[in-house]
Image 1 (spheres, one colour):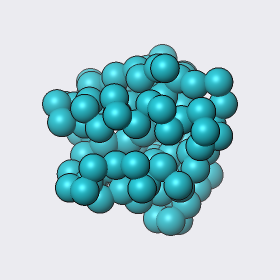
Image 2: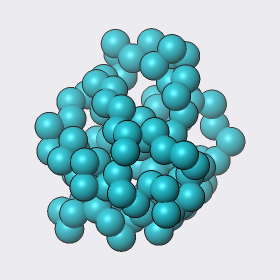
Image 3: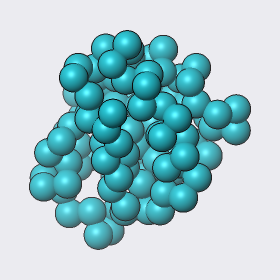
Image 4: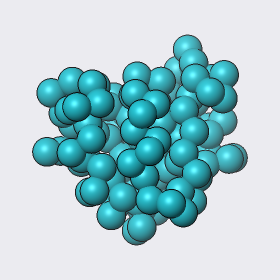
Length: 107
């Protein structure tokens, strides 16, 4: 499975994904600064899942035709220390995440 981490997430999270996951950051791909709608349309051609902390994505985007699953992380901040406890649940969700589905993961 290929996973894209939003640009506001620490790249250190990459080390907390299961071994069968290929995890790339928005910044690494050179896609920083893209609006969410455009980013999702670009990403759906290469990735199976998009992980973000942007709580507005469900309300901002028409996800019915998006071919990528989205995980929205809910934590005190986007610091590694606040997000790393969410990773076991993120890994579990990725096993069943479907295209166009949005799952909120909170501590």
